[in-house]
Every structure is written in structure tokens, then in C-alpha cells.
Length: 127
Length: 388
Image (cartoon, rainbow over all chains, first blue to last red):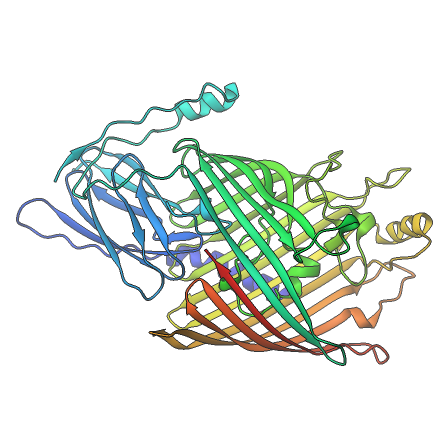
């Protein structure tokens, strides 16, 4: 059992090196655009960190793997419901004008670990 | 449509000076501009809950119908940075003196001070961050009518204590929790139910020496949660003269869900230092030697598959789980393990979700143990649980 225990711990550590970056797309013509898919499930968003640049129109496609969740970007007027599993995707756009860290969170009570459902949009100035 | 937003005002005057300083120094949301029509303001108070109704038929016994859990969650958001979360549970539908029929439990009631994504403070009645189920226990979220036995006697879910601590997320998907809480009471441990009855449950708890618990988990890949947890405390406070009973619980788990498939596994171990002295002390106090071990161990592996997914009438999933639980794994010198508490479980069944927040469950539990005298009864269970 000790070996299996260590195997499980090792599996968790190995996952450190296999993080998946959010899908991105950028197009010319007008301002820059970027699209990211975020999956919500009790009690996390994946990915929980999204990087973008000021002036970029960020399109966020939100899907739930279980119950209904909310998606709210603190300090903005983005606050939408993510429908339950198999009931579709909610899409929002967000165009940050200033660099900084924008916290997003689940805005619909979804269970005992609801408070853990938070993430960040990291906005940097174009180089 | 464009909307320019300004920073929000925060009122921190009522809180402790240290927290005020931390909150003021933490980065505030920057001004933002977006293209989404304004949404209605968030409700500052939320009400939610879940319920769990079970029918259990043990082999050679009459069936039993039990409204196992009725739980209400109430939350309040004082500001973007300060919020209250509570969970009040009525177990077994009816409460009378000495908990013979049921219990009312305050399983969560804490204030969260959200400083930034990496570092936050929490204080109040806390769920211990140990294992898969303890912090993630809404009925539609797990297969099987009853929670795994490992999450009953090795990790005593629902495990909650009064305390305070920190939590946060570092990088992309690495989350941690670390709390100081009241310790387990070793005088209540038993050979059959493990550490389960040692929970103080935040009721006039002894805090002579605080316990420490923590969890590190990775949630950076869709569907994957891999974590490890610990709990350590000195649990001999009830004895006079007092003596130390260091107890250490370690745990590792992994869960992966993608499309129709889900697999999960968990291992947990309890180490009790000075178990021989603990047995002697309990025997002197109660007249009965509890036959407590130096080590208790348990683990399970579960595979499940949604045979129907996304249909108009709902989803149907099937599962099989194997559990190995031994609350007499290693005994102190002079003590002999009781073989009936070295148990194996095969649990198989199905769940029907007419909608994602309602689960109708059925399962069959085949139980064996190492005893040649005491037979472990098999069981048939039906359950309905829902979240709203």
C-alpha cells in the first residue's frame, strides 16, 4: 500500500509539468482578439489563469461539467450564468484597458467549496 | 456598448487592524472596460442546500428508510473581499437528547478574507481539507448511496472543526490550504469506527494544543484533481494525568473525469503513537480495552462510465468500487488485531440524473472480512439526493 501511496503522490507531482495553456487565437483587422475556453466544475475553473494584453478583446467561452455556475469578473460588469452540464456554453467578451490582475470567481453558490472557485486574468501592456 | 468602471469602495473599519492593513495593501481590481451589457448586481446573500434520502437493506435484516441529510447553505458577501459561508445539517431527520436519533451539525461557518489569489485568510468552523469527499460531498457528485468506508472511519467525513488558516492558489492550478484547528479526541477512537467518534465538532472544543492540517492539490488540467493531505495533532487531552497521544493522518488521492469516464482513487493512513498506553488509559477510564492499533489504513479505487449522456431524459452512469479498510493494520506490542475489522468492499451500481442536480442511485455492497466467525453483511441500497 505504501508503494501505491507514493505512486499517487508522484502522479500529482508529475502533473506539474503537463499544464495545458488556454487556447488562443489572434486576428488582424481592428484590435487584437483572443479566445479562451474555461471549464467550470465543483470547485475550480480550468484554466484558472488567463494571460492577455491591454486592448485585446478577450472572448471567454464558459462550459460546466456539473451544476450551474456563475462567472463574474470583479471590477467589471461581467457576471453571467454558466448552464448545467450538457446544456450549452455561455460566451462573454472582456476588453481590459489597463494592465493588472483581474480576479474572476463563481458567482452562483454551487456547494461546500464554492469559495475556492476563483481565477485571474493577467493583463500586460503590449511590448 | 462600452462601460468604464471605477474601483469599488470597501468598508473595512469593523475588522481587526492586521486584516485591515493586509486588505488595503493587497492589489485592488483595476479599472476595466468590456463589451458585455451590464448584468444585474450580485445578490449579497445566498441560500442553497442538498438532501439525501436512503433505503438500506442489510442481509438478513429488515430494510431501513432514512432521511439521512437535510442541509442548508447560507452565504453572505460583505464585499468582494469578505464573505461568510455556512452549512447547517440535520442528520437522520429527527433530533432528541444524546443524539440517539439524529444530529444538528454546524458543518461550516466561516469568514473568508480574500486578499489575493495566492494568499487568503479563513476563520470559523472549517471543513478539514483531507481527501476527496470531505470538501466535495454534495450527493450528485459521487457514485454510491453511502460515502466510501475509507471516508467514514479513516477520514471521518463530514470532518469539521473550529479553527483558522490560510488558502490560495499558486501558479496555474496549484492550490493549498493550511489550518490550525481543534484536535481529535483519542479517548473516543474505536477499533470498529476508527477515528470517527474523535471529532470534537466545534462544540466547546479542547484547544490545549492545536492540530495542524493542510492540503496541496493540482487542478490545472481539465477534469484532473490530484492531491495530498495531512493532519497532525496531540489527542490525549481528555486523560488525567494528561499524556501525549500524537496522531498523524496522511492521505493521497487522484480523480480524473473526462466526457463519460471518471476514475478516482484514494489512500489514507492513521498513525497513533503510544497506542499501547492509550489502550491502557481508556481501559482504566471505561473498563473496556478499545484495542486501538498503531496504524489504520484504507484505500479505494473507483471506475465509472456514463452509458447515457446528454439525453433529453437525463444521464445514466454505472460504477464499480473496490475498498480495503483495516482499522487494525498494525497493533502495539501485546495487542492482537481483531480480524473482523480488516474489511473489503465491492460496491457496484448505477446513478440516474434526470437533471444534473438530482441523483437517483442504486447499488449493491459485497462485504468480506478476515474473521472466520463474524460474517460481514452484504447490503442493497437505494438513494435519492439533490442539490438546489
